[in-house]
Image 1 (cartoon, helix red, strand yellow):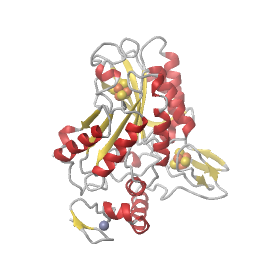
Image 2 (tube, protein in one colour; image 1 turned 90 degrees about the vertical axis):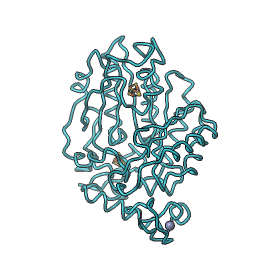
Image 3 (tube, helix red, strand yellow; image 1 turned 180 degrees about the vertical axis):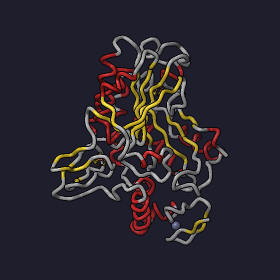
Image 4 (cartoon, helix red, strand yellow; image 1 turned 135 degrees about the horizontal axis):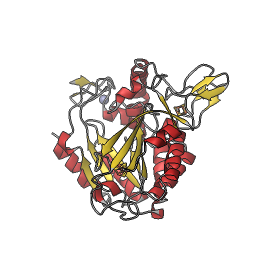
Length: 365
Ligand code: SF4
Ligand code: SF4
Ligand SMILES: [Zn+2]
């Protein structure tokens, strides 16, 4: 049981790291921000990552993501990748990525596998090898060791230990990994956002080399990139039969900032913009939404509002509600219950969404 530092309510679903309850985050952000910002700063210091996005008026502006860091000499941007050395931003490049990669046999445990070409065969024969699940082919999973957010519930938090020291791979080296049996590439992480230019270049080069073969390109992201890059990844996904998987963390802006340290405004704007392009390729679905059901924080109000928003963009957009398990800085919270997940699913459908699914069912309690 943790006691909220503002209202003194005690609950098993108040996170120790945040120290404040959902109602106070929503209703008294001016008071809760002090606690939640400090918690984010402390958690980043532990990994030697910049505590906040740099805002030096004389620094160099990076516009790759929503943080829009203004980085002073010899300092890093919030992602811990980009650095101002001698008046130039180094640390990321169009031609070199800091990442790790592995192959997953298809169909794989992908957040979109229940609607995508690899999991269902939808889009056959242009975008899928067969009418059902694509057995015998592989997904190339590309894990970027950096992120533009700082989620306390991060599933892949280990990347923080590798942000600075991870090895580099060039576009040519990357493309040589893509073999005949690779039918999709998924850029994720961390998040692809801080290295979005490398992902775009490497995807374009892989598509140029694959000739007439099926090669879907997908991104799994918090959606916080610059709109121009977002439109470029949409172009590639549309052409290749891939999809953009947007992880929508929360609807309430104060809650999004408490959980991730970053505003959701860019993500929601990008989602709307992506939604306006769905008609350019309807099958397989171009965008997919997901939300993690964090006990005590992502409640029915959040899911109701997110569902209405997604439905307003397009009711056909598939929405995956993901079960939470205790992890990283939120290891003191319980698992998502089955009854709560089912209520969320009903609510999302009542909001008008036609394709809703509970993901990670094995984690439900
Ligand atoms: S990618 Fe985002 S977090 Fe990284 S330096 Fe640029 S604006 Fe900052
Ligand atoms: S990477 Fe894309 S095509 Fe491959 S399994 Fe995931 S969503 Fe489906
Ligand atoms: Zn409270």
